[in-house]
Amino acid sequence: MTEPEDFAGDPTRRALLRAMLPHVPFDGWSDAAFRAAAREAELTLNEARAACPRGAVDLAAEWHREGDRAMKRILQTENLEGMRMRDRVAFAVKTRLRLVEDREALRRSAALFALPQNAALGARLLWETADAIWTTLGDRSRDGNWYTKRATLAAVLASATLYRLSDDDPALEATGAFVDRRIDEVMAFETWKNGSAANPLLRPLARPLDWIIRHVRAPAPPTDLPGSR
Image: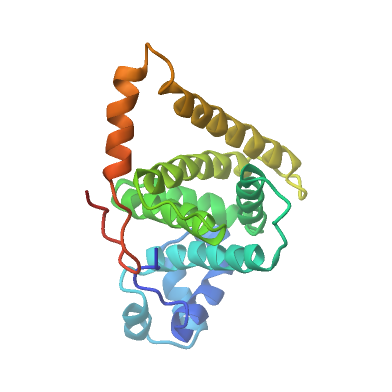
């Protein structure tokens, strides 16, 4: 999935984000912090609004996507060939969490995207991270598994991010152990799901669900529109 409204190469947005980050721990992703960032980046408010129509919300989303891009660069350069897929996914999630050095900025970001008006964007950003992990790790599924893999991983990312907020250990060992437990739970469910078709009690339910999954199609790149049958 490509990033919607990808401003990765926009120097104005990058300058605003760099100027705003020092204000976030004190003022949050707020309009006051956005205005201060515009002044420090030597931009008029109109110029700043042109780069970020939603103001601080756009910069919070860009901060998240910067982390995704950094994670993808690491995954592309690491030698993961000797790892099981379960371990590759866990490594990717832990890498993404370690890239968040400013825990207070993360806390403020979580609060921002918990607001009703921003919840849809927050869910989309989690989905983008899950998609970036699976795509970078070489996932080739194009049926309903494309969706289930990303949905379950997005749930792992959401819970692990909240756990990360309470972990003040620079090594994030407790967070890493939490991620391992969540991944193991997902793998246990996948094992159960794969074996349900052979269970005579579950077979009447499993077969229709399997048919539906096989006939759903992932979005054709580069669009981010929903899949179709």
